[in-house]
Length: 218
Image 1 (tube, rainbow, N blue to C red):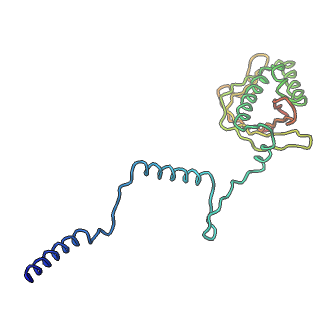
Image 2 (image 1 turned 45 degrees about the vertical axis):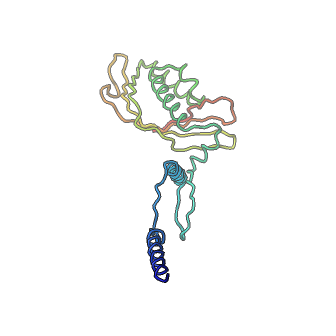
């Protein structure tokens, strides 16, 4: 009887030891694979954070992160006062006006120039065109294109007249011919780089969207 009990205890001990070796221990770290759905969510979060970071300039000061807005120039602040103003659209229109005025002036086409200039500029252009006709001088302008076009200054006065100065760097070939057709100025085979600063004006409270040329200088 006592022997049977001892054998039974030994069997129980062996079974318990076996169970402990299997169930009583566990790996230190269990790595679970990330599902496709979880990976997609993490990717979206990272992309959103990246976009937030790119939308602002940040500087570190004393271990803290601050957003720093981009500073506007004085010209940009003035342009922001003009209702519905778009820089790209304005410069595209200014280029068309420049080419039209230059070529029409050379050809003496007064009626084309009239709606593009203010009264003072129109009188100046008209005077030169009439003088050339009296002296039988003809002008030829071969307009090649622009090297650069940029706004260099802008202002709005107390009467709400906005003035925008634009620097045009263009490639042109210009000549003047006398009554006999001989070249008296310029070279038809020489393309030169010409820099002009033209100022356009418009009353920002006017219904008319047209900008008029009010001054020119080299």
